[in-house]
Length: 291
Image (cartoon, rainbow, N blue to C red):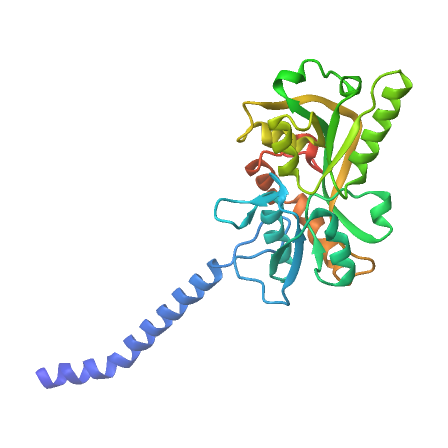
């Protein structure tokens, strides 16, 4: 009797083993399929991009778009955006930090593949690079809070120095126009003071070496909430001073079509709004309305 039961057990074991193997295979397949996640409107996944790596240039001094964190790595809205965009086009990336005014020459020479550094899409720049826009930034004037009440408009800047980022024509041109208006009204000229980094300009405003800075409102608002928040504030916003901001690639770059498609999907996705919220972008900075 025992021998008969053992014989049946041996005959049944291959069937049980096969069932177990099929169950394991099904579980593995389920686990694999759940490891890939999609963001609405994009084709990005949790898998690391496997294509040729891109070198992306930034000045990393434009918070909250891009700046160096406490660990030394570059962080901000643009870093999070690029993770989604490069995932969509299957191209990993590394950052290359350069002075802002050296970014376009580095792109043209082939030292970097792309610029992502809060760069305004201007007519002059569009003659030498191609842009893929992802946001817009109104201009604001930042100064010490103790000076802000006296600076209601550009006339309050007459006779003072105003900082701008070297290599950013919109700010420099605006300051020069204001200065002409000041001298035309019999007031002191505005001294346009160029800085290589936003951080250096902010530090000089804080210590009184420079009176104010003309910069994108997003930077002004971010700084107001950070280490200089108790001393610096917005004096006024520049009427009609909004500029589009975009990724820049070489003229006619083969990257352009795929970046345009990926960016369109990203802006329409929930990820765009999630990233904007995470870095405190204002509704006026965005290319679409977010819930």
